[in-house]
Image (cartoon, rainbow over all chains, first blue to last red; front, side, top):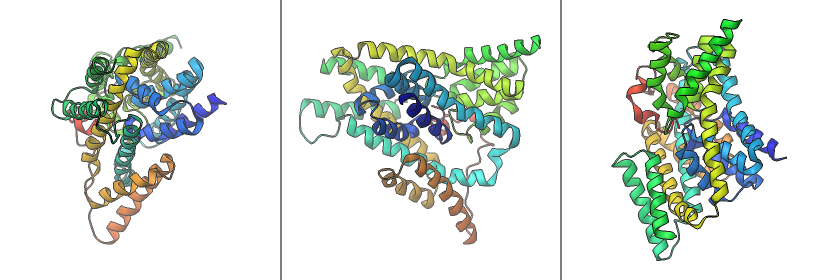
Amino acid sequence: MVLWELFHTFFLMGFVSFGGGYAMLPIMETGVTQYGWMSAEKLTNIIAIAGMSPGPVAANSAILIGYSAAGINGALVSAFAILLPSLILVIAVAACFTKLHHNPIVERMFYGLKPIVTSLIIFAAIKFALASNMIILEVSFRSISLILIFGLSLFALFKLRWNPVYVIILSGLVGVALYS
Amino acid sequence: MKADTRLLFQIFWTFFRISPVTFGGGFAMVPLIIKEIVDKKKWLTTEEITDVIALSQTVPGAVAVNSATFIGHRIGGIRGALAAMFGVSLPTFLIVLAFGISYFHIHDNPKLEAAFISIRVTIVAIIVYAAIKIAKTAITDKTTFFIMAAGVPLLFFIHPILVIFLGAITGIIAIYIKKKLGYDTEMKKNKEDDPTNNPDYYMGAGI
């Protein structure tokens, strides 16, 4: 049943949601492929919409995946599933360990967690690069312009320090101009 | 009881109004939280807020949601936590759902499809940007570099949740072994930094 698949995917994701939304892409991608909720292309479109909206990228993406797979009920179940672990853990931590961020075991855990979060994001970059048809070994207007868009997007983010939302919007306008 | 309900509604309403500001990262919320919770309502002190936000990062989940829930819990117990969580989540839920519904209505439009050809590539750039930003704080020595390098190929074979657990366990074991060998590992102190002053550290942590 789709609602149950959505619930347990995002409920489990909620418990390991370290390092922000982009680190959670591999888990979402695994769920989407495993249960056949949508194509990799559509997933990338959804991540873009999630990134343009206010709110956490992971929760936004979960809501949109849920909506796409099972309508409004799917969106509600996914939002509930991803919020529930936060609620449980925050109440538990607030009740028992008010100084958790000074705990040596927690510090050691994060010593290993932070590089793993980096691996997750690198892995997501590889997966989504493959899905974006960016890496094709032929010289055409499409392939060259896509590489250029990728380079200019990086330039806008790193050098011009633009907000990612504006980079997405501008890129969309470029897409309309070039490919429609 | 009546005053109690009023307090819960105030918690809900405060976070409901702050929430849509979390555009591109939960940390955009921090100055507003301080203004509303500390200056206006006087529910908590700035030190308490700073402490709560540092604590929020050690708990899985979005920083915006976690810090709101923590603050709600401080003010009004479990029901306060629920009120704050609903308050902070409801506006963004409705906004993203509205965007999503419009997208699904017109996604066959050729102009929109053309826009997404380009946007999909930009999303890859944004992911690369997030990876480099987080690598700057995560990769502090050879051990962390090795953990990162080993993690990427593992992800092609093992479920990501399992890899995350392996990372946490490896962190604990690595420091234990280093201590035995007499190395001192310098770890980033997350309390001493004021979270509002260091946006780079939180890029990718809050969104």
